[in-house]
Image (cartoon, rainbow, N blue to C red; front, side, top):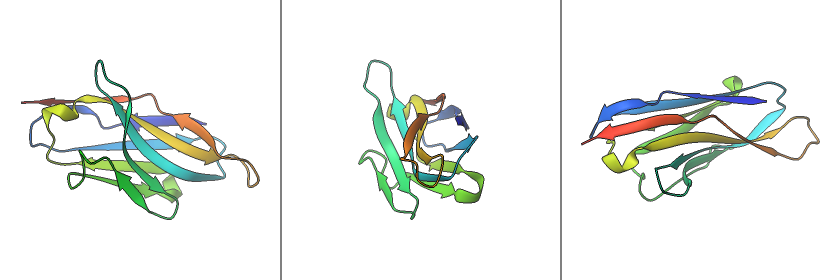
Length: 120
């Protein structure tokens, strides 16, 4: 299984970006999909997550600005980021819990990361 993230870039404060992350390989189902981020000198933190039923959760710092969604047919998660702030600058990583077979326990996978830079 591989996760491929895309959509990062350089944007001015107040701007928007849309991140995508697609899983490929042998997949029976994807239980949860999430985005984490890691800024220089800081620990990796959860930004947003979405379950297979569509329930979502967000870090307080991004509530009302970021929206996570998923397309199960494409094994893809998206995150629309609006009202970006310089403090959102970080490498963003996707993270999936995936079942390879119907009776398999979920296994955790990370994408390679995509850089988001917000200038003031």
